[in-house]
Amino acid sequence: MNKKNVIIIMIDGGRLDRALKSKIFNEIKSKSAFFSQTITYGPHTIAAMHAVFSGTYGTRTGTNSYWSTYNFKKDRFKTLTEYLKENNYYTYADLINELVVPKQGFDEFVVHDEINDDLIIRHTSLLQKTADMVNQGKSVFLYLHYSKIHTGIMNQVLKVYNNFSKEFFDNRKTNEQRYDDLFHGAEHYLENIMKKIKELQIEKNSLILIMSDHGISVGEKFGERAYGAFCYDYTLRTFTYFISNDFKPTEITSQIRTIDFMPTILDYLRIDLDPKYEKLDGISVMPLINGFGMEERTAYSETGNPLDKKEPPKQPNTKSLRTSKWKLIFNQHDGTKELYDLEKDPNEERNLVNQEPEVENTLWSQLQKIMNSQ
Image 1 (cartoon, helix red, strand yellow):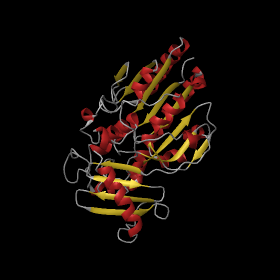
Image 2: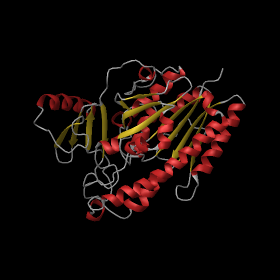
Image 3: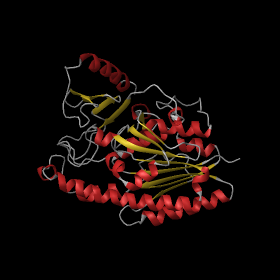
Image 4: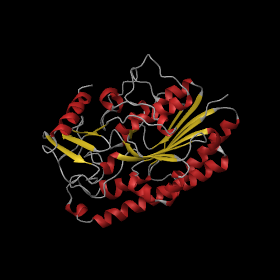
């Protein structure tokens, strides 16, 4: 018997707060195991998606920055795609550029034209191709990258402003509207994709993951006009919808990490981890999906703040460790720390460094251990 198909629909730059208010996303939520507190490893696509596909932080895999795709240690870390390929899946990726996910294991690895391609037409045709292959008795892994939010931000923000442009930060309402317009495009895309999946009856024998790699600033913090400079929740906290006929629809508020996706998928498919490769940082969250409790794991994130430079540094210089209650941020570029009580201060506006020494020291010790694990 063939294993279930796996479809990942990645909404590049999708903000959690918009998804929570969206009729279309909430319809999907009503049919999903929805995780409302998922933390990405990297608030930019390359590091984020390599962590998803490897189940491991970039501190260990080598892909920890905009520049480090080719540093991925493929001899030491086996990807989700490789596991599926070994289990007779046909593997296909349609994505924004060839750097964002590891290539190994893909039968087809296709880059779309993010400016000109109609992704609804393009991706519904790929779903038709998937259905045809399934009807021929094949199992399929399909990765669909919705890039239009990214494209809009690139053209309307990144090419127009820098991280310290007063005009950007003084016009929060304009920033909100700009982002909302782009997010509406993602809603329209997702509505059509899910309609096609239902029409083709693909969902009957598939695991579908709808996710975001990171959020995007609308001007919350001076010094970050989009993403990739800071480690605040508006870019780190993402949305996650696991859809399967085997899953009871539920909202799960426990903190998980995007590095947990790969071991969760493999656990669901009953594919064993390969002992010849290094241990993952992520763990399966199938117990949470099945209604059981799990001990919360801390979520590590890092990025390269460009500061006053035009390009981000080769190595991350801003790092954070998060629990569902606390977050410690270490700005390595100037040695400063920030500590936030996320329950009382979800917008991270009151820095409690030196005010909660026990919490700070515990998180700092754990953060240093991860930073030194390269």
